[in-house]
Length: 448
Image (cartoon, rainbow, N blue to C red; front, side):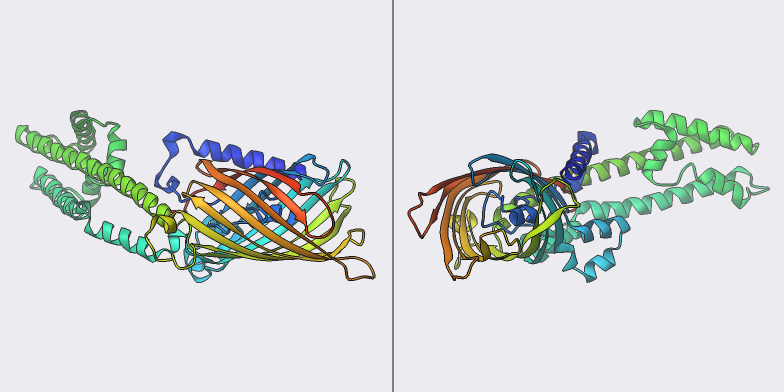
């Protein structure tokens, strides 16, 4: 399983890097990314950098490399990947109407992961993650949708485009009148006129491609030669006045063509800049908004590092809620915009009889301070477990960490944390808990 995940990660990462060629970047690449892709399988494996995971905006496809410290103090690696199958399927099939009718499904994610156990065994896990409420999703943000609807409706270039369409129609009417004037005694057939008119019509891109020129004057020269050759195939010869009239029509066509090109390029540039500006505003104001997630999954052990001998260790259900500090949901203060609190509850049922525990319940919280792309983290967790045996002894411990998370690049996040774990019974010393991880969201488009 580890090899399978590595192969998938390699292929997808390569595809992602290729997609980031500067020549291929489009408006779709300006996506919103302000949350670490907390892959559910890592939590099921119990190797996440944070015990209290942060609910965040759903990634269509994410991979993670997680390093953790085992009970013996050894540094071990973990690999995982997570996908939102409905998002990918709906996009591939272009079934937007089905998407709109099943919005709850688009926030359902599935993940698998592996981690190195002892020297001779491999740990594996699967998990599902559902996000019923996500106030950080720009696609579902009504205010943002209304802004761009108003922006497009009021943009001057829209009126200009309507004006250009009228000019194109008037231009083609003039061309048609010119063709009718060429043979007054015997009009050109409709088929012949259409064959000539096509050189004047079509979208501006097709016209530029047809005459292979980005220069106005060269475009006109090439177009005139092409049209004259076409007229020659129909045995149509032009006198001086007709030749001048044709030249004027071609100059008019060239002017319209390059005006349309300039208008579209200007609109695309302005819209792209406005999109980036709105993205920045949206992230600053919404990175810490309300998100609720529910998760479940199972953890397995493989003594021989193969899929065939996987044995169930435990299953787990847990959920979390993240949002602004209570009372500051609608505040514009610095504290409201730069902080987030997270609460989580978890239940684990152990199925491996060799394990010392029957079940474990934990609850905890986490405080984030900072910005959308970098923040400090403080976490506290309390756990209580029932020990296997004839007695009803319980094990209790607290865990606390401080650390941070930082976006290195679009989609790429680094997590660091260090803290301690203290059992509430006995005289065990506090255990140091160092953790760090690297996570990468492969699929980034269609987020904004």
